[in-house]
Image (tube, rainbow, N blue to C red; front, side, top):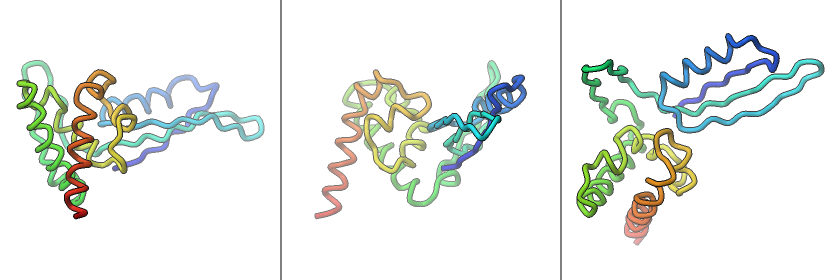
Length: 154
């Protein structure tokens, strides 16, 4: 996982904020933490952006997106978790009779694979995953993951 820090003066004209917004639009953001910092007469917002470095192009209307090879993007450890999550997603999709991407996309699984703990709250911090999908599929994904961990420990 990658981190980028942005500092935006409170009385800023918008240039720094636009720079940060361009960055956010161009990356798969996992989490953004913000803090107001006051040093003497100077006050600014500090943003710590936690993002997944994904090599892909934004598809224009009618164009196909480039396929991302997550084996090249993720660390070996995270790719192993990613592969397991894809297997669990496939089972969930088959049970629900929906396409796998309707459960979670590969990009979302890649971000989930990099989380320290797979929890419902952590899933909500992943860009693109909302409360409804966490309620519908998150608990099942977490349960499958925990069962796998228990099996490996035996």
